[in-house]
View (cartoon, rainbow over the protein chains, first blue to last red):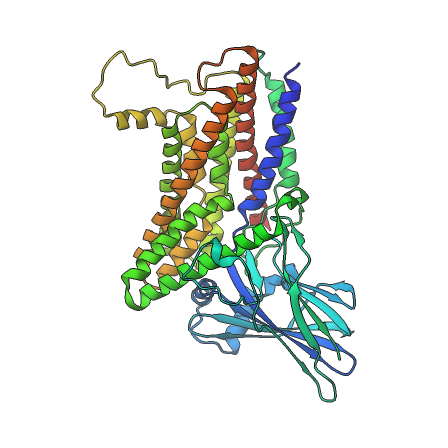
Length: 214
Length: 320
């Protein structure tokens, strides 16, 4: 019976290795989203976040063809909302929020809209906060990395592919804020966030946004 | 050495199924259209350093943009520079897959760790995977999209049946490899290097291929290449939408060539690792024989676990 320890060890190592592999096999993003966000405040605090999602050319091309979209009107917006957006509810739209220190994952959105340029589809929608908030923290990511969602990154020149070109990433101009009459717009800033743990990949960093009501 | 009993083997398979049910939870559906999040949190993957992952993601974004822009440039004006750029980047994409390992490399790596082989077996493995990969991607797009007229998301979704088939075959061949390993049967029963008595007029290459086809590894690598690569299919669909399908096919071939390079290198690498551990001569001595058996068993286990976990993951995501 001296073979048993070897056998058990082999089973254990093989299992660990294969689990890792299984996780990683799904780790290629196939949809890319640049997000832009506007924080809106009233006199009590921040009340909603208006998002704009800018899609990559390939996803746009697929949506255009599959949903038979040439130009966008009210009918197309409804089609897209039901067919190529609604299911994200299951993923709480990849939005992770902390409202005055408390976690919040949105279950609904409002004001869904869509526009189409020649190459790129864009969605707009609003997340209404459950209560006016003095300070919020926001980050967007897909822990499974099927969708690479994040702020637009400055200068990703396609003419110099390679690891060298990707050493430092910096988001650009994706934050704005506004206020209803009589209130002041909140101040927003981004920073490299705390590393998070993904089921697929382990630790990774995201860009976090902090907004404070004035 | 005692060969394993059927009872033990069945016990092992039950353990394996339990493991698959627990861990096999990988989502592949496009979340915009369908699917639910994967809930298992495998914290042992936490070893990955943050900057490394950030680099890989940035690099993937980069490659994606570069490929997209070259295809769009080709649609506009057929520039030769754009074509070369596309092929070069696609080749790099194929090579680069090693940083985010798919199942193929793991299977080749573990097989050559566990079984005695020569360097050209590794090259053969890479070749099989590269060719199979291209045929699968082009075939699925041709049949589902062009012949059956399915939508693009539906093509990617239905390609998962092919994935299921590939993973199932991998797991089945893995079980067979394990069975043979545990019973101390020779790695390949039909092929041997001892029948050089009668001279035949085959070229050496033909003889090599004939020999290879008899091996279980060829079935294994062929099964692995049945699993379609979503990235390649998306490129093909995008070139179709831009009326430059020919460029898409060339790009997929370039990806396959890149993969050939990487897969061969991994095969040869694990072959060398094996030689360092057990040597490549006849395995004499009890300790060495034992180590050989452990390696062989381990290789089969990795193959089984990879195939069955991915099978279960794909199956679950299709149910959801």
